[in-house]
Figure 1 (cartoon, rainbow, N blue to C red):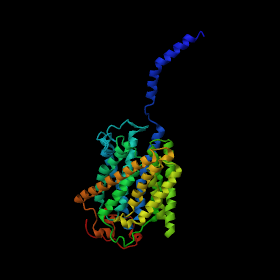
Figure 2 (figure 1 turned 30 degrees about the vertical axis):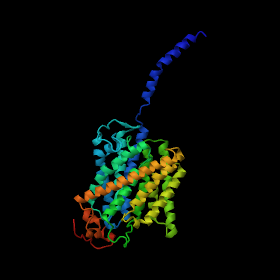
Figure 3 (figure 1 turned 180 degrees about the horizontal axis):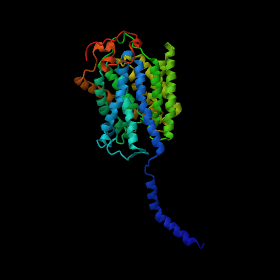
Figure 4 (figure 1 turned 120 degrees about the horizontal axis):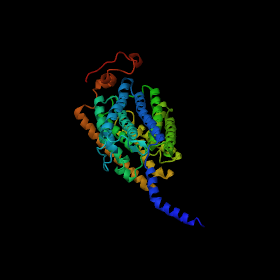
Amino acid sequence: MKRAPYTAAATTAALLLLPLLSTAFAADAKPHLDTGDTAWMLMSAALVFLMTPGLAFFYGGLTRAQSVLNTMMMSMVSIGLVGVLWMLAGYSLAFGDGGAWLGDFAHLGLNGLAGQLTGTIPTYVFASFQAMFAIIAVALISGAVVERMRFGAFILFAALWTLIIYSPLAHWVWGANGWLFKDGALDFAGGTVIHISAGVSALVAAWLLGPRLGYPRNAHVPHNVPLVLLGAGLLWFGWMGFNAGSALGANQTAALAFITTLIAPAAAMLTWLGWESLSSKPTAVGAATGLVVGLVAITPACAFVSPWAAVLLGILGATASYWTVQAKHRLMADDALDVFACHGVAGIVGALLTGLLAWTTGSGKPIGAQFMTQLISVVASLLYAGVGSFILLKLVSLVIPLRVPAGQEIAGIDLSAHQEQGYSENELGIGAPVFLGGD
């Protein structure tokens, strides 16, 4: 009992110090650099970077031997082109504070990012990670226009598309002030921003360019299926960083995204092979295509759905894309490598099913409200990217003709565009290649 005065004094002192202690804890709670998260994000950025060379192999194997280099170059040049544009203005337009529709110009040239953090990682790392997304988005479009689009026209379109289509869409969905972000649209790693926008843009480009010579009477078969399988494997490998890296840290969210990115493509590949087997034989190209479709479908949902829901996403995404490919002639466009069917359609399925299945992990709004939000984001992406790409391609055509001359298309674009070829004359199984007219 004699110690009671001291106890009372200690209690009073503690109460007086409580505001100071709260301030100290609040200061400790500020974001701080986490080396584990940073290491994971550096690795994730490298994984996503590898996806574009993987896409080059995937697309290259699907085309004719005479155009394999041009096809692969469209992916590879995207790395150089978009890498520079992202630094100059793309990042600022996408992730600057700005308003509901577009970022600002505060970070032109990546100004003001030195020493800054995004969450627990350096903002430079975040900007690098997001650059890889912008790069592969524009590379995806090339699959629809291979073997007939001028290389210079593609480069000019890709530059305009990156700044005028991709960056605003990224701001809408991922920017803190973006209108779809504020509306609660769920797109964890790019279903709308990348796959729907690239898919519909590819369809528009294929329609404006017109079909390949001889299409659809003459078969255009893949010239190198092992390249297709190699590319698909690299895409799956890199996609682990694409999806799990979007958690921006080495955490439970990344773990969920990682396992769903394993499960959905596996289910999609089996589904595609099953559909093929009903009418013919299961093919290697079908397996590669199926797994890519599954990757696309799970991308917007990977951290919002449970593993069992990922199976459903893979099955439904593959089914929708498979039957779109079978009916591709009804699209009135020669989408050469089925970019819209595999990325646009699977992206739409994935985005909408995210709204219906997010409840499996407790994410999002009530099912009906979330589905409507997802539907709005899908329609907005389709309209903006589709109409915008049409306008940009028309503008490009005023500067550079979009299509190569018929003689160059018949002979293959590699020699006319790059003065080199992927294979020797003996490997091509033809005599000395003939360069036919035009520039």
